[in-house]
Image 1: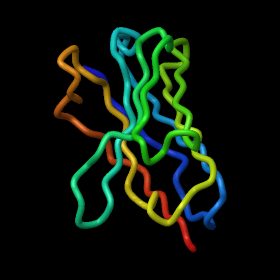
Image 2: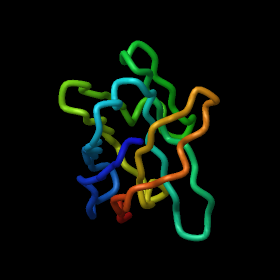
Image 3: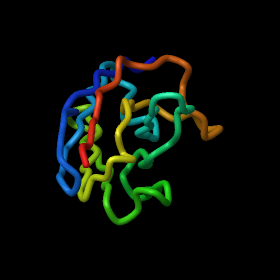
Image 4: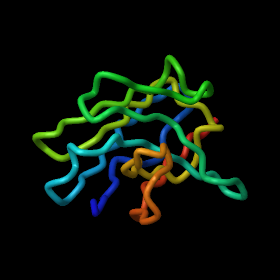
Length: 119
């Protein structure tokens, strides 16, 4: 099982940028597709972006396409989320997780990192 620690969140003005990092423990990191998810107050957790094991494929929610970029460094057991042109509606707690072959994330989650975008 992969253990995850997210970082890089903060308070930013609308139009600003942040880069989130997710450090994973364990030697199995490169075996899994990885994803970033977010949960806004009063809303369900949603998928933001995902990346395949070799970084050959990425997918994005329509709401972040063209603004967010997911990447990973298997040598560092780290996955990143570059977020540009941030909007107030991007405000949420952001989580990363490994993705099972079924396409769903694993049940165990890290503490997440708070992203707050002011208007």
